[in-house]
Length: 364
Ligand code: NAD
Ligand code: GLY
Image 1 (cartoon, helix red, strand yellow):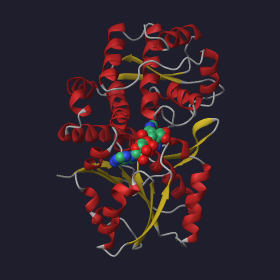
Image 2 (cartoon, protein in one colour; image 1 turned 90 degrees about the vertical axis):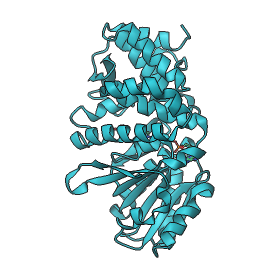
Image 3 (cartoon, helix red, strand yellow; image 1 turned 45 degrees about the vertical axis):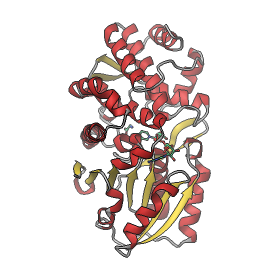
Image 4 (cartoon, protein in one colour; image 1 turned 90 degrees about the horizontal axis):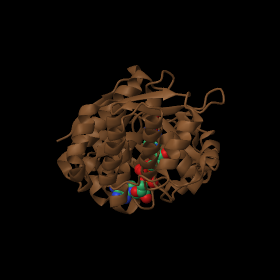
C-alpha cells in the first residue's frame, strides 16, 4: 500500500510517496516530467543495487536515462563531485527540461538538489531517498548543499523537488549502522514537538532497529508529516519554526567538521549533539534530569553514540562559530524545556555550555 504526504507550498507543493516496491513504479516519476529524459545521479554503493530496476521501469515508459555515478560517502559531498556532475550533464547535453533524479542517501539528495538549483539556472528534480535518514528528513524540504572544508552544508540553496519517492523496501539493504543514524533524525521529531510520537518511539525502538516493515513505514510517515508541516510554515528558516529541526545539529555539525567528514555518520553526530543540547538545557535549569536520562537511553537503544568527542570548549565554540544559525556573531542554540518542547536561543551562559559539554564527553 502506498501512502502520500503533501508538502503544501502553494504552486510549488509536492507529494511524498511512501511504500514498498515504488522503484518499479516508473509512472510516479514520469507523471512529473515535461521531457521524456532524465539524468539519474546516484553513488557507487547504490548504483549496483537499484539503478537497473529504475532504468527498466523508466525505459518501459520510453523515458531515456543518463546515469551519473559519483563515489559514495560524506567525504564526497564537495565541489569536486558536484563539478563532475556538471561535466556529465554538459557532456550529455542535458537541457532545461531534463529532470535530475537523486537516487541515494542524503549526500546524493543534497548534492543533486544543489546541482538542479544551479545547472542552467535551475532544472526540475525528483528525490528518491534510499536511506532511512533521507526518507525521514533530507529528501523533504528543499535544503540542498555541499560541504566546505571549514563547515558543513555551507554552500547551497533552497530548492524544492517535484516529488519525493520513498520506497521503504530499499531500507532492507541498508547497513545497520545507517539505520541507527536515520533513527537519530526520527527521534528528533519527537523531541522538538511530538510527544505522542516520542512515546511511540520509546515503545517501538527495538522493532525499528530490527527493521520491522510496519514500524518503519509508520516512522517514515509520521516523520514526513512533521517535516512537511514545519517546512510549509517556515520554508526558508526565517520564522523560527524550521530552525528547531536543527536540534543537536549545532554541536553535531561541529563534531562532523572537527573529526573530518565521514568519520562519524551525520545521524551519529546528531545523536551525540542532542545529548549535549539536553545536558546544556538541564544545566540551565530547564530540562528535568529524568528526561535527559530518558533521551540518552533511547539513543543508546537505537544503537547511537551518546558520548561526544572531547575537542575542548574553545574548539567547539570555534567550529560552531560557522553554523548557519549564527546571527550578529552570536551562536544560536536549539535547547529543550521538556521532551516535545524545543526553542531557539542565543542566550546560553558559557558556564552552562561548559557544564553540559563536560558531562557529554565522558561516560558519567
Ligand atoms: P549517505 O547519503 O552518505 O548514505 C549513507 C550510505 O548508505 C552511503 O554509503 C550510501 O551509498 C549507502 N546507501 C544508500 N542507500 C542504500 C541502500 N538502500 N542500501 C545500501 N546502502 C545504501 O548518508 P545519509 O545518512 O543518507 O545522509 C546524510 C547527509 O544528509 C548529510 O550530508 C547531511 O548533512 C544531510 N542532511 C540533509 C538534510 C536536509 O534537510 N537537506 C537533513 C538531514 C541530513
Ligand atoms: N534538516 C533540517 C531542515 O531541513 O531544516
